[in-house]
Image (cartoon, rainbow, N blue to C red; front, side):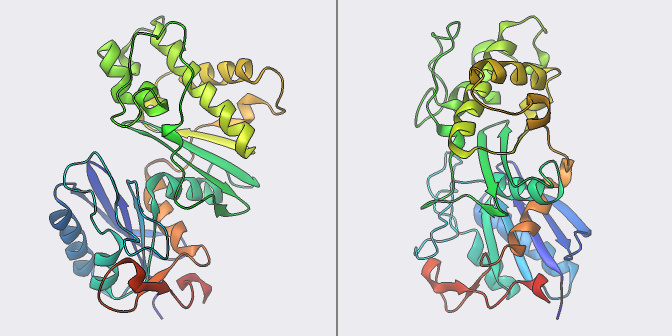
Length: 313
């Protein structure tokens, strides 16, 4: 039986496709620009076929929102997204059918959260929260080795936020909620009101303190609800010099002495670098019960749990 896993990191601007084995060795990878669904997914499938050989499973860590309800007729599809042409696009079914193997799918941030928990900055912790701050803001939480889900995946970037006293005039950029966390602290939100990315603004610019404050408020809320042992902050905005230290300081202030833990040990950056997305796709295939197989033509409810995970021997 093959142990080769097809990996798909589906992003809003590019897909990264890879092939790995259960030992986490990524044997091959390529990038494909995200255009129309049929074109992009078709190119990804063609590349995986060209690599040759059979696959035990496909792991997909995708931008969302996604329908992850196993009983839904639209399971594995993107739901309502602002990316033109992608609302209602089937992500899981085309790969499962074309490659003839079961598929595991979740959001890109959930995949990264699981990978960092297992092999990266959250390794050895009982629970971890991963928050990505970039073009959008999203979060995933892992406890006891399992991703936190309800009827769907969490949407941590869309929590409503108190307003910073020096930021009242900005209405936010989220098309659904205006001034939610993503609408206030994402990369596009920063550029919308200050005309540049955070890393290009002078160190003394008030934007640094304002963004750190918003992220610290969010972290405080997530700590109160999820009580994670480790909080991992990734994404392009987090590459801004000294932002991490500002967030830690602001989080200590926001907590008001209520929570235990040292900010420098609890709030950290990712450890897996550029491999986090593909390793996240791999990690999704290794969680018991995640894999689903096509049982007849159609979508969603035409999937059923696969007999076992490929890594189970």
